[in-house]
Amino acid sequence: MPPPVPGQGGDSHNKEISIVSTHSLPAATPEAVGLCPTRLARLSDMLRARIAAGHIPGAVAAIVRNDKLAYFESFGARDPVAGDRMDKDAIFRIYSMTKPIVSVAVMMLWEEGRLLLNDPIGKYLPDLAAPRVAVVRDGQMELVPAARDITVQDLLRHTSGLTYEFRGTGPVQKAYMDAKIYRRGQTNAEQVAILGKLPLAHQPGTCWEYSRSTDVLGRLVEVISGQSLGTFLDARILRPLGMTESGFHVTPEKHGRIAEAFAKDPENATDVVLLDVRQPPSFESGGGGMVATTMDYARFLQMLLNGGRLGNERLLSRKTVELMTADHLGPIAGATDLLVPGYGFGLGFAVRLQAGIATMPGSVGQYYWGGAAGTTFWVDPAERLFAVLMIQAPVQREFYRVMFRDMVYAAITD
Image (cartoon, rainbow, N blue to C red; front, side):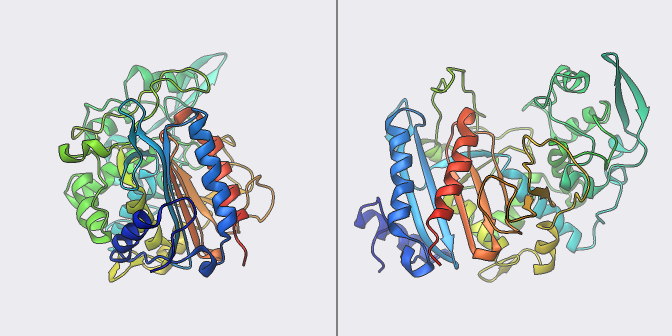
C-alpha cells in the first residue's frame, strides 16, 4: 500500500485508496507519477490557510496523472453552520460542470446516427425553428429574422445566439428575467417553449456567448431518447461510469453529505443562495443542475482522458473525444471575461490553443470548465493529467480556479 500523500493521516488515506482502487482509479505516490510531494503540500497549506482565515468553509481536491490518483484531500468544514468536517465523499452542486456531461450525452446520440451536428435544432425542437434576433438601436430593441438556423453544433459551442439572464443588463437579458427563464418549477420542455418566444442576442454562428444552450441540449436528449434527461444520464453515463453519487438531486439519506457555503460571502458580504438540491426538480437543467462528489467527477474525466472509455465501459470513440476537445470557434470571437485569451471552445469545453498568451499554465490541447459555486476541473492530455477542485464559494471562484491550476502545474517534476 503506498504511503499517504501530504496532509492526510495514514489510516484515513489508506482506507480511501482501497475504495478508489476498486473503482478503476488506482493510487500512486506523487513521486511515482512525476509530482513533487513538497509542492503538493504547498497546495494543501494554501487551502488550509484560506479556510483558517475564513475565506471558504472547506474544499476537496483530486489530482490524477498517468491514470493514477496521486492527491486526494479534504479540508475544513462541509457545513459552516453545523461545523461538520469536510469528508472526501461530500456532495457538491457543480452547476456548469453539468455541461460537459450533457455534451457527452448529445455526442453519444450523434455516434448512434440519431442527429447530425449541422442539423437545425428546429428539426427536433419546433419552438426554436424560426428565431428572431434583437437589434438594439438607441436603447430600443428591434427584432429581425435570424440569418440562418441554430444548429446542434451552435448549441454545443455556445454560438447559438442565446444568452444567460445574468450576462448583462440589456433588453434581451431583461426579457429573460421577465420571463423567469431560470425557474426550477418549469419542465425542460416548458423552458424551451419560452426560449422560442424570446429574441436571440446575436445572429447564430457569429458570436461566442455563454448561454442556456446546454439547457436546450438537455431537452434535445429528452426528445431524441424518449426519456427524461436525468433518466438518460443515469442509465447511459452515470451508472456505467460508477458515478453513483451524481444526479439532479440528493436523496434524503445523503443530505448530511451536501457541502454548503457561507450564508454571506466573506469577500464582499453578499448573500449566497445555492440551488436547493434536496428535492427532485421539475427542471433538470442540462446547463447547471447537477450534483456530484469529487471522485464521481474524476471518473468522468478519466473516461475522457482515456479517449471515451473507463474500464470495460466505452461511452465515446477516441475520435469523438478529439472532436469535442478541438476548437470549434476559429475566428468567432465573444465574451473574453469567460473565454480567456489563448483559448477557444470545443463541444462542451474551453480548449487551449497556445502555450502562451493565457495567464495560467497548461499545454496546447488542454480543456476545462467550472461551475458557478466554485467547482473547477481541467484535463491536460499532453501531461496525462487532470485535476478537480470542489468548493462552494461563488464570489471567490475565479481566484481558486487560477491558484489551483498554478499550484498543480508547479508540482510537476517530469
